Amino acid sequence: MEFKQEQGIVSADEEILTIGAAEAESQTASTVAEEDDVALTEALALSGLGFGIVFAVLVVLMAFITVMSAIIRGGKKAEKPVQKKEKSKAAPTPAPVAAPVATPVAAPVAAVQGDADMYVSLNGKKHAVSVEEKLPRFNISLNGKTHAVDVESVEEE
Amino acid sequence: MNIGEILNNLWTTSGFAQADPKQLIMMAIACVLLYLGIVKKFEPLLLVGIAFGMLISNIPGSDLYHADYWTNAEGVNYGEVVGHGGLVDILYIGVKTGLYPSLIFMGVGAMTDFGPMIANAKSMILGAAAQLGVYFAFILAVILGFNGYEAASIGIIGGADGPTAIWLTKELAPHLLAPIAVAAYSYMALIPLIQPPIMRALTTKEERTIKMDQLRTVTKTEKIVFPIAVTIITCLVLPSVASLLGCLMLGNLLRECGVTERLSDVVQNALMNIVTIFLSISVGATAIGENFLALDTIKIIALGLLAFCFSTAGGLIFGKIMCKLSGGKINPLIGSAGVSAVPMAARVAQMEGAKANPSNFLLMHAMGPNVSGVIGSAVAAGFLMAVFG
Image 1: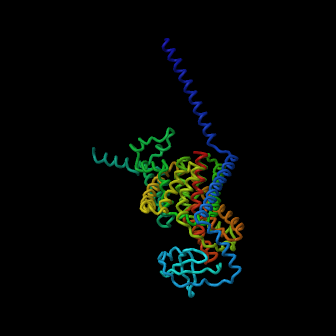
Image 2: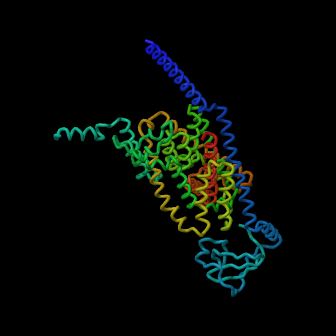
Image 3: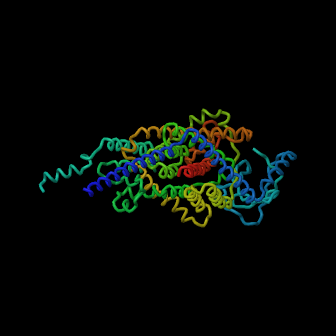
């Protein structure tokens, strides 16, 4: 009898424990569901923050690339305005092509045409050329020969 | 055992006897997607695999994929997957662990020339602006009743980047992986139809005819330093995106450094193709009837389209602002290429520019925003992962 009573108490306790666990589970589930949900104001704030971070990261990268390029290219940008000033002083004239020089060709013509540094008009025909810059005098590779060119002015399109 | 019993067993184990109407509908949808991929050539390299994965996983009794292995609340039991899983279960490990999207990014990096972006660093702003659709779709998804995890996964469709969408969704809302992947890749294929009307609506004829100056040549040193620097800067800000961006930049470094041509070749071709097959089959196979045939799928498809449209609009609006600020030297059409579908979005910008002015060549200018959009969408995904992951 005692055993039965004890058993009854034990089973009742188990029932209470089971009910308690079920309540706790449902409470946890509802808390998780509430945590998963995002209010509209939160969504707006997160969107603003996210969009801002994307912009910030890409702007930092942009600034880095600009500085890196300036350093690697060795201040080429600084030379451009000087050339533009010359344009206003002198009338635009085609760059004279000097006699071929004896130095070896820097790059073969086939490669030059695929990845040209600039284009020059010569005898009414447009040519892709590679340029070895030593302004105001530089060498160009054209049809397999290297020519020394003096820059007198730069004409923009 | 008599012939009657054998025939009865054959019938009861056949797919015909086990067929469920939802599975048959999914098989029909798979056939439609196969038609779009093969006949209409909508992203065939991916869509054919996705559609075929969808077809075989929905064949009754095939047991190639078990959704319950992957949605277990106690976590994935990989011993069970390897020991008792089907073929697609084993392939799906690469999706679940984030292996395939990262390897695809390595291939994308090895195939991408970041030169146009380095030559015109300002174009990175357009890559950021074209992530507008990600956040717009995120807000709309919250309004439509999706929870934060699901809304973040739906929003990333606006990044127009399939691997990024898969990478984020497998972590935040794996039960939505199939509709999100199908929406992302379908809309990427439909970019030539989706973008032009928005481009024409948001720009004037004069703006579309603007010719841009030729880009400068980018030195080899710049191209080598770029992937290393981007990895360091971006991953320091958002470490969660290290696997995606790290792989993208590793692939690009293999391409540009000049001493790993064999590796670059393997990553661009063999590895990329193998991973594409595994990824497309396993993503398609997750589209099982009970998950896919739901109202949520229709909502996701609609939200994905809106996300693409708003991303395009974001790029174009910032393109117009940059056009004004530069005194009309920037054609705003290149802003639409800020959505990262490479190189499709840049081609669309080129085509629209050429329609307005046949002597206009915008392709290389549009490649700048296009490749920066890849970085932008990865950063957007990294942010959402950091918040919800």
